[in-house]
Image (cartoon, rainbow over all chains, first blue to last red; front, side):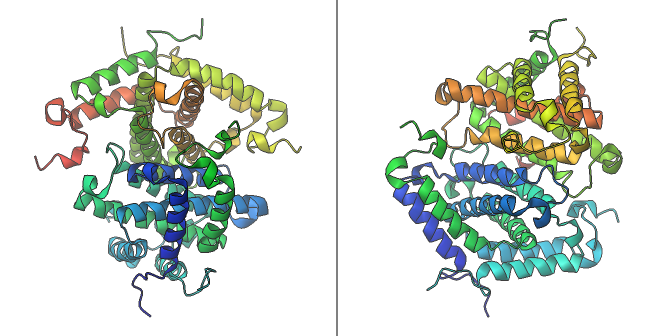
Length: 125
Length: 125
Length: 125
Length: 125
């Protein structure tokens, strides 16, 4: 099966749903990439807020009600990311595939196994 | 075509690619939801950094080289979001569909057209 | 000794140093409150990045070199906060004193001792 | 007048007020540097949220009520920054003075006047 992006793929369908939502509200005028990247950061922080005082934040520690809120914050993050991709004509699926190739080069499994330093901190090994 | 999530959908395939990348590096031990939500916020801010001094940040203002960097930051955001969803067993596609239903109720098109106030600021109208 | 703000206070002196730095570079034109709040968020995330995979991030776990980087990121956060306060004519010292009064009302010590829930989650107790 | 830090300085006094607030609530146990840097990022994003759909976010565009909320978010940012500095034994005033020296070297006024590129983007000039 091809891993190339698909006009009928999930992300394209979500993009269309979000686009319609925005158009019905005449909100496109506010959706500059600059504003959308701010909104994305704000949603990411609202997600982080749920975890900030927890130990690990796994499903058991969150509990049912919090997990539901977390799911919705995750959705908000994805909605703004999809919207930003729409405005910049970025294919998110292709971008991830491409970035994962770069990540494999930057973090060779043999070098970094079990270690979370940043790629530029491995140089001295 | 059904809009329900699909085990063969794009997001599920990306999740598997990311999961394999993590497993090969024995990084799952670091991937608590708490840590992943921090990493997601950090990537969202790296994305925002590209836009902070621009006027609107559209493709023309960014330029080719910056747009490529932006694409990669967007990929990083999606990778951590997918990874967090994997750890919390969240179906991102279903979560967005569900959240968009809530958004339609919170922001009725007739009420909010052309207006970006937060939903709780419409009460007094 | 009075705790009211002081024109000769540390924060006012730092504000003047930052203001001069900006003026010498003709950067005031970029320093809208909107842009400064983005820059502040980005710096806060660069600070967070140092801690995201650590256990607690105390001085011993950070190590000398990382702690120095952390100090500089903290300085960046304060510089942008001071700059934003300058542009909005906010007295940071007075704002903190005022906010701490509100915090004392929102989080009565007897109610919240040893508990980190958000203030609006105490209602049901 | 010396610009060195002062045990009686504003920042030291605010640190003591925050420290007492925390101790009365037995919250020190939650205040790892890791958690505090998350909380700082979350507060910075709450501040950013007020500006995300505005043009410039100056006092006139914000309006009186929003400006008051913004002041309180700015106070929250400073409170967490002061608290983090306390836990890591960082002198914020000294750190800013030190960082401004580095900034002057990184961004020579003659080179960067009226230009907001990152320091590492000036190389090719």
